[in-house]
Length: 306
Ligand code: NCD
Image (cartoon, rainbow, N blue to C red; front, side, top):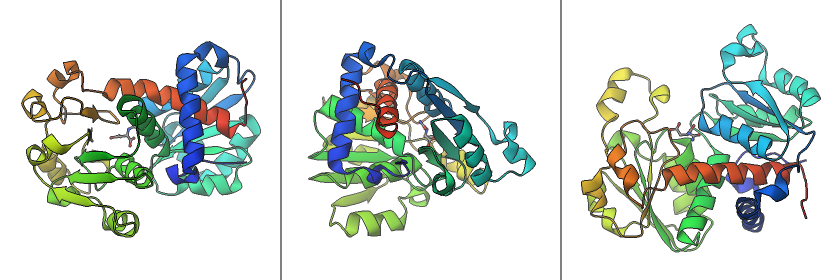
Protein backbone atom coordinates (compact mmCIF):
# COMPACT_ATOMS: atom_id res chain seq x y z
CA UNK A 1 0.00 0.00 0.00
CA UNK A 2 1.24 3.48 -0.89
CA UNK A 3 0.64 6.88 0.65
CA UNK A 4 1.48 10.33 -0.73
CA UNK A 5 3.38 12.55 1.69
CA UNK A 6 5.74 14.42 -0.64
CA UNK A 7 5.95 14.87 -4.41
CA UNK A 8 9.24 12.94 -4.23
CA UNK A 9 7.35 9.78 -3.21
CA UNK A 10 6.91 9.19 -6.96
CA UNK A 11 9.88 8.64 -9.26
CA UNK A 12 10.07 10.82 -12.39
CA UNK A 13 8.79 7.85 -14.45
CA UNK A 14 5.86 7.29 -12.08
CA UNK A 15 5.06 11.00 -12.19
CA UNK A 16 5.06 10.91 -15.99
CA UNK A 17 2.62 7.98 -15.90
CA UNK A 18 0.38 9.82 -13.43
CA UNK A 19 0.36 12.99 -15.56
CA UNK A 20 -0.32 10.90 -18.69
CA UNK A 21 -3.25 9.28 -16.89
CA UNK A 22 -4.55 12.74 -15.90
CA UNK A 23 -4.26 13.79 -19.55
CA UNK A 24 -6.28 10.76 -20.65
CA UNK A 25 -8.92 11.56 -18.02
CA UNK A 26 -9.13 15.11 -19.42
CA UNK A 27 -9.68 13.78 -22.96
CA UNK A 28 -11.98 10.84 -22.12
CA UNK A 29 -13.74 11.52 -18.79
CA UNK A 30 -16.56 9.07 -19.63
CA UNK A 31 -14.10 6.14 -19.56
CA UNK A 32 -13.48 6.76 -15.86
CA UNK A 33 -17.03 7.55 -14.72
CA UNK A 34 -17.48 4.22 -12.89
CA UNK A 35 -13.86 3.36 -12.10
CA UNK A 36 -14.40 3.79 -8.35
CA UNK A 37 -18.00 2.57 -8.01
CA UNK A 38 -18.54 1.45 -4.41
CA UNK A 39 -15.29 3.03 -3.13
CA UNK A 40 -15.19 5.69 -0.42
CA UNK A 41 -12.91 8.70 0.06
CA UNK A 42 -12.71 10.36 3.50
CA UNK A 43 -11.61 14.01 3.61
CA UNK A 44 -10.14 14.83 7.03
CA UNK A 45 -9.54 18.57 7.05
CA UNK A 46 -8.30 20.02 10.35
CA UNK A 47 -7.59 23.34 8.62
CA UNK A 48 -9.75 25.49 6.28
CA UNK A 49 -9.79 24.68 2.57
CA UNK A 50 -12.09 25.28 -0.35
CA UNK A 51 -10.25 24.14 -3.44
CA UNK A 52 -8.28 21.18 -2.17
CA UNK A 53 -11.12 19.51 -0.27
CA UNK A 54 -13.76 20.13 -2.92
CA UNK A 55 -11.33 19.15 -5.65
CA UNK A 56 -10.74 15.79 -3.94
CA UNK A 57 -14.45 15.33 -3.50
CA UNK A 58 -15.21 16.27 -7.12
CA UNK A 59 -12.45 13.87 -8.24
CA UNK A 60 -13.96 10.93 -6.34
CA UNK A 61 -17.50 11.77 -7.49
CA UNK A 62 -16.26 11.95 -11.12
CA UNK A 63 -14.91 8.41 -10.63
CA UNK A 64 -18.28 7.14 -9.40
CA UNK A 65 -17.17 6.85 -5.76
CA UNK A 66 -18.57 8.27 -2.53
CA UNK A 67 -17.21 10.88 -0.16
CA UNK A 68 -17.55 11.85 3.49
CA UNK A 69 -15.46 13.70 6.05
CA UNK A 70 -15.11 16.85 8.11
CA UNK A 71 -13.94 20.33 7.19
CA UNK A 72 -12.65 21.72 10.50
CA UNK A 73 -10.97 20.40 13.62
CA UNK A 74 -13.82 21.92 15.65
CA UNK A 75 -16.37 19.62 13.99
CA UNK A 76 -14.30 16.45 14.57
CA UNK A 77 -13.38 14.50 17.70
CA UNK A 78 -10.07 16.41 17.74
CA UNK A 79 -12.13 18.95 19.69
CA UNK A 80 -12.58 16.25 22.37
CA UNK A 81 -8.86 15.51 22.40
CA UNK A 82 -8.70 12.50 20.06
CA UNK A 83 -5.27 11.93 18.50
CA UNK A 84 -4.69 11.84 14.75
CA UNK A 85 -3.55 8.21 15.12
CA UNK A 86 -6.79 7.12 16.77
CA UNK A 87 -8.88 9.03 14.23
CA UNK A 88 -7.14 7.39 11.28
CA UNK A 89 -7.44 3.90 12.79
CA UNK A 90 -11.18 4.47 12.99
CA UNK A 91 -11.45 6.02 9.50
CA UNK A 92 -9.58 3.00 8.10
CA UNK A 93 -12.66 0.94 9.03
CA UNK A 94 -15.00 3.24 7.08
CA UNK A 95 -13.15 4.36 3.94
CA UNK A 96 -10.87 3.01 1.18
CA UNK A 97 -8.62 6.10 0.94
CA UNK A 98 -8.30 9.41 2.75
CA UNK A 99 -6.96 12.93 2.20
CA UNK A 100 -5.76 14.77 5.31
CA UNK A 101 -4.96 18.45 5.84
CA UNK A 102 -3.50 19.45 9.20
CA UNK A 103 -1.93 22.62 10.65
CA UNK A 104 0.90 20.59 12.20
CA UNK A 105 3.83 19.60 10.00
CA UNK A 106 4.12 15.80 9.82
CA UNK A 107 0.58 14.95 11.05
CA UNK A 108 -0.39 13.08 7.83
CA UNK A 109 2.92 11.21 8.05
CA UNK A 110 2.07 10.07 11.61
CA UNK A 111 -1.37 8.99 10.36
CA UNK A 112 0.17 6.97 7.51
CA UNK A 113 2.21 4.87 9.95
CA UNK A 114 -0.92 3.43 11.60
CA UNK A 115 -3.36 3.56 8.70
CA UNK A 116 -4.57 0.51 6.80
CA UNK A 117 -5.77 2.68 3.86
CA UNK A 118 -3.73 5.05 1.63
CA UNK A 119 -3.27 8.50 3.22
CA UNK A 120 -2.78 11.57 1.01
CA UNK A 121 -1.15 14.64 2.52
CA UNK A 122 -3.48 17.48 1.52
CA UNK A 123 -1.21 20.10 3.14
CA UNK A 124 0.65 19.93 6.48
CA UNK A 125 1.36 23.29 8.10
CA UNK A 126 4.08 25.27 6.32
CA UNK A 127 5.74 22.04 5.16
CA UNK A 128 4.42 20.34 2.00
CA UNK A 129 1.42 20.25 -0.31
CA UNK A 130 2.12 17.42 -2.76
CA UNK A 131 -1.24 17.35 -4.55
CA UNK A 132 -0.97 21.06 -5.31
CA UNK A 133 2.44 20.24 -6.78
CA UNK A 134 0.95 17.49 -8.95
CA UNK A 135 -1.60 20.08 -10.09
CA UNK A 136 1.18 22.57 -10.82
CA UNK A 137 3.25 20.02 -12.76
CA UNK A 138 0.26 19.01 -14.88
CA UNK A 139 -0.52 22.69 -15.55
CA UNK A 140 3.07 23.45 -16.58
CA UNK A 141 3.36 20.33 -18.74
CA UNK A 142 0.01 21.01 -20.43
CA UNK A 143 0.51 24.73 -21.04
CA UNK A 144 4.27 24.94 -21.63
CA UNK A 145 4.69 21.46 -23.14
CA UNK A 146 7.65 20.55 -20.92
CA UNK A 147 8.92 20.25 -17.36
CA UNK A 148 12.53 21.07 -18.17
CA UNK A 149 14.35 24.13 -19.59
CA UNK A 150 12.28 26.66 -17.69
CA UNK A 151 12.89 29.86 -15.77
CA UNK A 152 10.35 29.99 -12.95
CA UNK A 153 9.81 33.00 -10.70
CA UNK A 154 8.20 32.24 -7.35
CA UNK A 155 6.80 35.37 -5.75
CA UNK A 156 5.34 36.31 -2.37
CA UNK A 157 5.45 34.33 0.85
CA UNK A 158 8.24 31.88 0.13
CA UNK A 159 8.90 31.33 3.83
CA UNK A 160 5.55 29.89 4.90
CA UNK A 161 4.10 28.89 1.51
CA UNK A 162 4.03 25.09 1.47
CA UNK A 163 3.04 24.98 -2.21
CA UNK A 164 6.34 26.69 -3.05
CA UNK A 165 8.35 24.29 -0.87
CA UNK A 166 6.84 21.25 -2.58
CA UNK A 167 7.08 22.68 -6.10
CA UNK A 168 10.75 23.61 -5.75
CA UNK A 169 11.59 20.08 -4.56
CA UNK A 170 9.65 18.55 -7.44
CA UNK A 171 11.07 20.79 -10.20
CA UNK A 172 14.63 20.40 -8.92
CA UNK A 173 14.57 16.88 -10.40
CA UNK A 174 14.29 18.17 -13.99
CA UNK A 175 17.00 19.46 -16.32
CA UNK A 176 17.91 23.12 -16.72
CA UNK A 177 15.43 24.71 -14.33
CA UNK A 178 16.37 28.17 -13.11
CA UNK A 179 14.63 29.43 -9.97
CA UNK A 180 14.09 33.12 -9.31
CA UNK A 181 12.82 33.76 -5.77
CA UNK A 182 10.99 37.08 -5.47
CA UNK A 183 10.15 38.08 -1.91
CA UNK A 184 10.69 40.69 0.78
CA UNK A 185 13.62 40.00 3.08
CA UNK A 186 11.38 38.57 5.85
CA UNK A 187 9.61 36.06 3.60
CA UNK A 188 12.56 34.48 1.84
CA UNK A 189 12.70 30.79 0.91
CA UNK A 190 13.91 28.78 3.96
CA UNK A 191 17.63 28.09 4.26
CA UNK A 192 17.08 24.31 4.40
CA UNK A 193 15.54 24.33 0.91
CA UNK A 194 18.41 26.38 -0.49
CA UNK A 195 21.02 24.12 1.09
CA UNK A 196 19.43 20.65 0.81
CA UNK A 197 17.64 21.01 -2.52
CA UNK A 198 19.30 23.73 -4.58
CA UNK A 199 22.93 24.04 -3.50
CA UNK A 200 23.34 20.28 -2.92
CA UNK A 201 22.27 19.68 -6.53
CA UNK A 202 24.10 22.73 -7.97
CA UNK A 203 20.88 24.38 -9.11
CA UNK A 204 21.17 28.00 -10.26
CA UNK A 205 18.89 30.36 -8.36
CA UNK A 206 18.69 33.99 -7.42
CA UNK A 207 16.82 35.97 -4.81
CA UNK A 208 15.42 39.41 -5.61
CA UNK A 209 12.96 41.82 -4.09
CA UNK A 210 11.58 43.69 -7.11
CA UNK A 211 9.34 41.72 -9.47
CA UNK A 212 9.89 44.27 -12.29
CA UNK A 213 13.61 43.50 -12.44
CA UNK A 214 13.12 39.85 -13.42
CA UNK A 215 9.76 39.81 -15.21
CA UNK A 216 11.21 39.76 -18.80
CA UNK A 217 13.23 36.58 -18.18
CA UNK A 218 10.45 34.37 -16.74
CA UNK A 219 8.65 31.48 -18.46
CA UNK A 220 6.39 31.03 -15.44
CA UNK A 221 5.42 33.42 -12.66
CA UNK A 222 4.08 31.55 -9.62
CA UNK A 223 2.34 34.05 -7.32
CA UNK A 224 1.43 33.21 -3.70
CA UNK A 225 -0.64 34.69 -0.91
CA UNK A 226 1.00 35.97 2.29
CA UNK A 227 0.11 33.18 4.76
CA UNK A 228 -1.62 35.18 7.47
CA UNK A 229 -2.40 32.12 9.64
CA UNK A 230 1.30 31.30 10.06
CA UNK A 231 2.39 34.77 11.23
CA UNK A 232 3.20 35.33 14.87
CA UNK A 233 2.00 38.90 14.86
CA UNK A 234 -0.67 40.74 12.92
CA UNK A 235 1.43 43.91 12.44
CA UNK A 236 4.00 42.05 10.36
CA UNK A 237 1.22 40.55 8.26
CA UNK A 238 -0.36 43.95 7.63
CA UNK A 239 3.01 45.43 6.67
CA UNK A 240 3.79 42.63 4.20
CA UNK A 241 0.43 41.57 2.80
CA UNK A 242 0.34 43.99 -0.13
CA UNK A 243 4.05 43.91 -0.91
CA UNK A 244 3.33 42.52 -4.39
CA UNK A 245 0.35 43.34 -6.56
CA UNK A 246 0.58 41.96 -10.07
CA UNK A 247 -1.25 44.24 -12.52
CA UNK A 248 -1.47 44.83 -16.27
CA UNK A 249 1.38 47.35 -16.16
CA UNK A 250 3.77 44.72 -14.74
CA UNK A 251 2.41 42.08 -17.16
CA UNK A 252 3.58 44.32 -20.04
CA UNK A 253 7.17 43.54 -19.02
CA UNK A 254 6.64 39.77 -19.37
CA UNK A 255 7.20 37.43 -22.31
CA UNK A 256 4.25 36.87 -24.66
CA UNK A 257 4.09 33.22 -23.64
CA UNK A 258 4.82 33.51 -19.93
CA UNK A 259 2.10 31.94 -17.76
CA UNK A 260 0.91 33.23 -14.39
CA UNK A 261 0.06 30.54 -11.86
CA UNK A 262 -1.34 30.79 -8.31
CA UNK A 263 -2.47 27.94 -6.03
CA UNK A 264 -5.33 30.20 -4.85
CA UNK A 265 -6.98 31.61 -2.80
CA UNK A 266 -5.79 35.00 -3.99
CA UNK A 267 -6.13 38.01 -1.75
CA UNK A 268 -4.64 41.18 -3.33
CA UNK A 269 -1.49 39.83 -4.94
CA UNK A 270 -3.03 39.56 -8.42
CA UNK A 271 -5.24 42.41 -9.50
CA UNK A 272 -8.51 41.16 -11.07
CA UNK A 273 -7.66 43.06 -14.27
CA UNK A 274 -5.00 40.38 -14.97
CA UNK A 275 -7.71 37.66 -15.12
CA UNK A 276 -8.52 38.67 -18.71
CA UNK A 277 -4.90 38.32 -19.85
CA UNK A 278 -4.53 35.06 -21.83
CA UNK A 279 -1.36 34.36 -19.83
CA UNK A 280 -3.38 34.10 -16.57
CA UNK A 281 -3.48 30.34 -15.97
CA UNK A 282 -4.70 30.14 -12.36
CA UNK A 283 -8.30 29.16 -13.08
CA UNK A 284 -7.21 26.53 -15.63
CA UNK A 285 -4.86 25.27 -12.89
CA UNK A 286 -7.92 24.55 -10.71
CA UNK A 287 -9.38 22.31 -13.43
CA UNK A 288 -6.10 20.44 -13.82
CA UNK A 289 -6.22 19.83 -10.05
CA UNK A 290 -9.34 17.70 -10.44
CA UNK A 291 -7.85 15.57 -13.25
CA UNK A 292 -4.64 14.97 -11.37
CA UNK A 293 -6.45 14.02 -8.14
CA UNK A 294 -8.58 11.57 -10.12
CA UNK A 295 -5.37 10.06 -11.49
CA UNK A 296 -3.87 9.93 -8.00
CA UNK A 297 -6.89 8.18 -6.45
CA UNK A 298 -6.84 5.57 -9.25
CA UNK A 299 -3.10 5.05 -8.80
CA UNK A 300 -3.17 4.66 -5.01
CA UNK A 301 -6.22 2.37 -5.14
CA UNK A 302 -4.53 0.43 -7.94
CA UNK A 303 -7.61 0.70 -10.15
CA UNK A 304 -6.84 0.01 -13.80
CA UNK A 305 -9.11 1.34 -16.57
CA UNK A 306 -8.64 -0.12 -20.06
C1 NCD B 1 -2.76 26.64 -0.79
C2 NCD B 1 -2.53 25.99 0.55
O1 NCD B 1 -3.48 25.56 1.22
O2 NCD B 1 -1.37 25.92 0.94
N1 NCD B 1 -4.09 26.55 -1.22
C3 NCD B 1 -4.50 25.46 -1.92
O3 NCD B 1 -4.45 24.36 -1.43
N2 NCD B 1 -4.89 25.63 -3.18
C4 NCD B 1 -2.26 28.02 -0.88
C5 NCD B 1 -2.74 29.01 0.13
O4 NCD B 1 -3.57 28.72 1.00
O5 NCD B 1 -2.25 30.14 0.04
